[in-house]
Length: 460
Image (cartoon, rainbow, N blue to C red; front, top):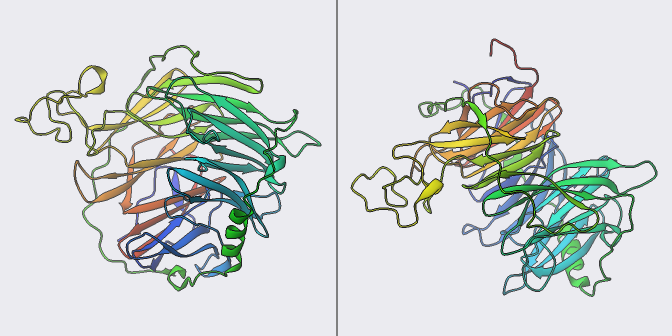
């Protein structure tokens, strides 16, 4: 029996590989780099990281390359990017109490400090052809709405990167994702621009942050050399033992649980436009380009190149269930429950409704049904269109989780039905061109699914 089901339009490009790992082992993938993982060994209570390595595997699943990676706090995961020559850069952060986070940027041979501020964590990092964009909250002693976009060359010191501030009025507007970047202009190492998404209480807004040409706004020379030293020391400590990361082919895997039901493909409908732009300051070098209503929350954003968003299509209560009219928050199926005190208006779904995932681009959106609201999701750009993935319980309060996937065309619409890929407690996904890697962990086993997602044929 197969270890996983391929999304429509995707076929295995190599046999699936399987490895045994400790349940305290975690992993991350860089969005555009297949065959590579950040692997972290944690203490049994996950309060401390015992070792972290960036590991690249060969076609047989053996370790081809391995290097240590600074990851100082379990709750502040690194964001990864590549140089034009194939080198690596990554962010790392450390908590200093009262919400203060010191953020650093590491390359293969050095680590440097970005800054320290209230909840100043790296939200996203993206590099194209050696030109990079870093997305963070606004830097300050007190957290402020809005975001900052740092634009520069992957190999240049962070102090030379251009810093663009996006100001948001009121207690709203938090950085969500870098949707796309435009490569450098000829003769410049700074990206031409970055398209970034901010999440507001009721909508998602996309902003174009201009890079080159323009004068950089370098950060002040910092006195926090200890931060860079801490990152450098972690890099110098050497790689972790990755015996568990040696993947091997499993010709006879254990039979999985009964296949979960596949959600239905949705129907396209017109998007009701949110209020016109106006609550976000637009300093020189920043321009709001598009916004979409997101009354129930957002999962991810991407440029295809048009801005595309994956959203919760139904309201979600505090327990991760669909909140319905006339039902107690957190128990949508209890007909005898008391009225939801928080409910009302478009924040509640009709009684008995299922969860849905929404894909929005331009003035249109498409909803697809799901057994339960996603816990998290990711959009990955393909050579044509994108791959949408998410992980969700099999039902409200179910402990069994399933990873789902569906191809999106260039207009952001699903190409066929959503496919339940496999049971998993956690997953990671990376894509480059038509090559897609899905890493699926269930218990002490990790499955490496290697796919080619090319043109969707009529027969699949």
